[in-house]
Image 1 (cartoon, helix red, strand yellow):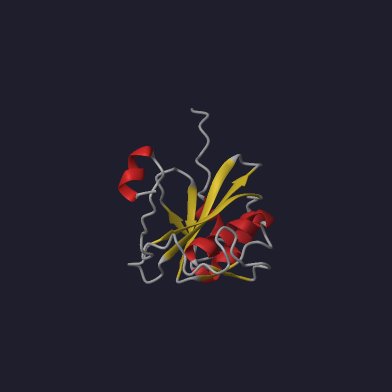
Image 2: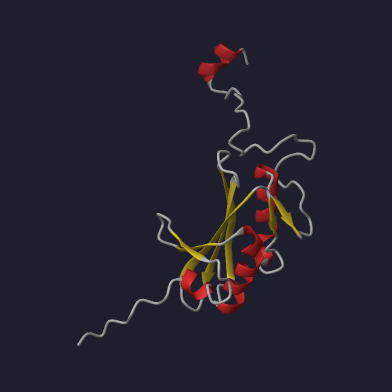
Length: 164
């Protein structure tokens, strides 16, 4: 007889009771990940916070793949103080997604940064304006189809080359 406890259900299995479309995601970092359709994003975030007690906001970030129809992969990373474990909610969008600011106040500037650098519009965000770039800046510099620009770095070696 062993004292081994059975493995707890995955976060996706637990969320499936309220979000039927929740699918277990796989990542290299080992964080329990749940993939949901974009129209279930806010509901899944609410279920994570209220039902599963993932109350500590950590991050919202975006990955851009212009070859995909839904080019932006948005990640919400949260932490459960009760279970002492990480959780990640992930979805794909074409550029519009519900804001989770009303659920996680810490997401305020992270959503603004994603809007500024990638152009993802978080619907329902109270102040979705640029946060890093000037208001007159055209485009979103972290999109993969944004042209790269070369700006000389001021090293002694490059002063002669660029006449700076």
